Image 1 (cartoon, rainbow, N blue to C red):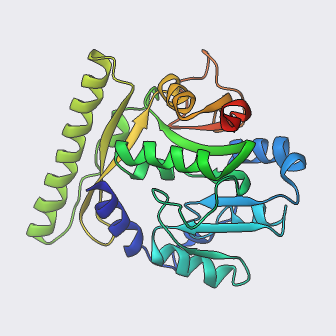
Image 2 (cartoon, helix red, strand yellow):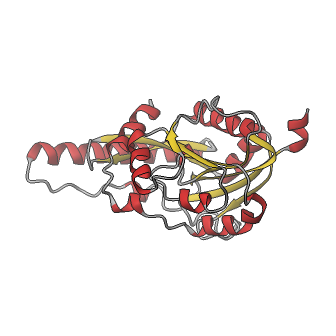
Length: 267
């Protein structure tokens, strides 16, 4: 269900949205690219969830062997308008059979795109990334942080002050529903020591939608990566510093850098 609802949201976004046209990197992305660029320069790079192409030009600058995709046709249409010479197309990350096993030296999945799918599809994506990577290939992605101290206060909705009674009631009702569900799921994840939770976000920009997005503790995400076959996993705060006991709850998203286990891949 989350794929359908979340995809509907991204397909509804306007190509004129200034945020969609930004190509500025986050601190973590700058730090990661600075660290790995020499090892992947000229190599085969795949970008999942390319969106409107925010990160695409930075990756394409490293190699002629770049390809990117997104499951939203609207996002890809916007990206192609901005970067007509960049190889971008519509595709689903849960089934990357269009790509050969061991085809890429690096795979990037930025801006928490992996959190837009249900949990079972998250595992499928990790397995597919592992498959298409070469032995010892690099996987870089980000995910919402369930340890973030801003939960659940961030979810409290801005009250609608529409002059239309129906809009006023509906927007406020749905916003409060999303907040209540988020609080309950967050508290349950704490009490039951759950490593991840699907928290709701209400958006009313174009269509009134309740979007489920996965939030996961870094330790749970690292464990999930190990189970998928990755090794040498590093968690990085949004400002580019290593994630530690001092800053583990500062950011609402965390970046991860992992390598495909060359020994396991050879078995």
